[in-house]
Image 1 (cartoon, rainbow, N blue to C red):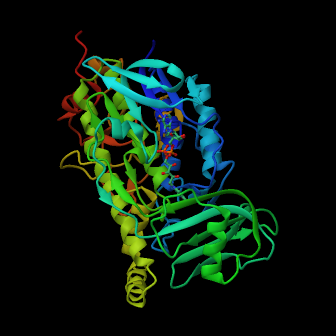
Image 2 (spheres, rainbow, N blue to C red; image 1 turned 180 degrees about the vertical axis):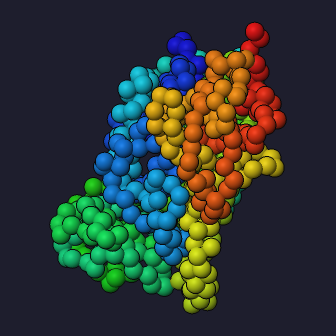
Image 3 (cartoon, rainbow, N blue to C red; image 1 turned 135 degrees about the horizontal axis):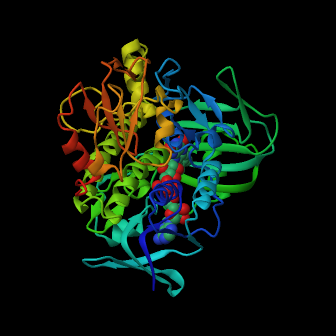
Length: 499
Ligand SMILES: Cc1cc2nc3c(=O)[nH]c(=O)nc-3n(C[C@H](O)[C@H](O)[C@H](O)COP(=O)(O)OP(=O)(O)OC[C@H]3O[C@@H](n4cnc5c(N)ncnc54)[C@H](O)[C@@H]3O)c2cc1C
């Protein structure tokens, strides 16, 4: 039986990101992935929100995504655009990039980090005991790990086999989505009628002056809302043709589908993200309507929250209960995503009274304070982990400020490339002694003249020191004293090493 410290079921965006995070921390991790290659059948996520681009920037890989995608102001709530171009971040935009490219880039990074991926195999079951998990894999292979993480999507076998409840709401709407050829030219763009929202677009597009401009030719991506939700069979070309005729009176001579799939607004969340040695992340832990484009983003950020914690536990620098902070921090984040997608789906309902409500909402979102608030929510920039009372930075993302150090100028995010925590001392150089944590925590003396400004909050008092976790969230803020620093270091990065 092959042993690893961690086995990840599923090598989609969440599993790949988690594998990269664990590998950076020196953890022996392997992925078991059902698909024979990273090839993705069907369209899924269309891009990345600002905070996810920042998260990649923290690891030094944002440029790989930016080089292939197109930046645009596409954050929106229930169809109302939320321009975030004035937000205090180096990435005040979203990035249009199809999920197959996002996965390919992530897989390339994971490959550089030498993570083994058992492709074309699936996790079929597991049994956990006090010291680890026996993971059964198809083809009779079996693996032993200290921890198993289910990143195996919405129908997660790991979640079901762990007996974790998945409460929520059944679908109220469903849509067919496909990549096809059409004999007749439809009007490209989004259309709404009394059945719901539908759209035609081409696979290839450019963003010019903030507008999507489709290429003249090439395959068409069609989305058509079905009159009756609830179908469970695999969708066919005939289903697509009938749904198009129900909406447009014609199927535009649809033919030669590359793929056809169905999505719904089913909304569910795992009751627990951890069952002893088994954890869940990404769609395995939460599913919801794709409106707002938050699923992949939330999964990648789950992975970045879990990765360093799990690494510290398997590397024996932190006790196991650090893993409980993963559920405590990430469950509320996804619960809010579920709520905002449900609200958006409701506002898209083809009903004049709902439309009136949507218009009122849209008017409210044009008030600058509301635009900032919702823009920060949809872009993920306002995520706040409850780490107690204190400075506004506590539990929020560390801004990527310019620093001057004895080694020269650098950006805060450059300090996070190796996924190691940082105590950033902006006061008297040499003012901190963290020798008992020096094997784990970087101590950097620096000067910073930038304004400390947080999305939707505004300018906050400049701290004299901050403890930044590997995921880029601030765990402790110093204000001329070191009060609470030893506790914060112990809580987040383990007890001090004896001299
Ligand atoms: C139409 C549509 C549009 C979307 N648009 C957006 C968007 O714009 N932005 C956004 O952020 N999100 C969007 N999403 C959501 C996004 O696609 C998902 O949230 C994202 O793929 C979740 O990633 P994941 O890695 O958690 O799960 P998945 O991508 O589902 O990956 C799970 C992986 O596990 C593998 N697997 C499953 N079972 C097993 C097993 N037993 N053993 C081994 N491997 C297994 C699968 O093959 C798969 O590779 C959209 C989704 C849809 C359907």
